[in-house]
Image (tube, rainbow, N blue to C red):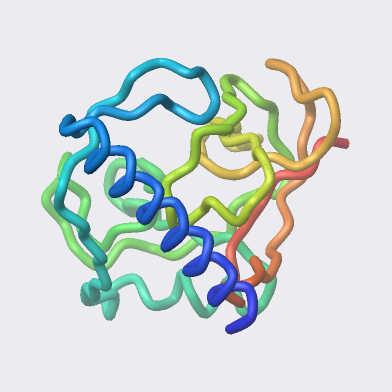
Length: 175
């Protein structure tokens, strides 16, 4: 994992050094985009974010991932299912919603191929992100794996370990 991260850091450093050289030689914070050749403005601030936020009220979601399950919450009063899960129903203003396991089957209703990636995902090949309508009617955003993804493609949910980060997450595989 650290070898991949080191490689990414070296690539980023080389890219930033090249940007600095172009800016110094031209006197303008404008460079040509590597993919399109179009001019782009270069901001002079670098930001690295590492953040934390409390998940105590939805920690069962992460326990579900460990068991290979995708969990959501359901309001016992109005029946609304929430994904991502939440502890309170904004419609009924009640707390402590019921935990339910999401079905694994669904259908792609929208998708896009991501080829211009944020830096933190730059080590991945182009990938597909889409909205899948799960068989219980809930729409879930996630990565979609498989060839020839189309609106209407049938998919099946799978919990996987995303490398190199090692995080448990879910993906949809075209069936």
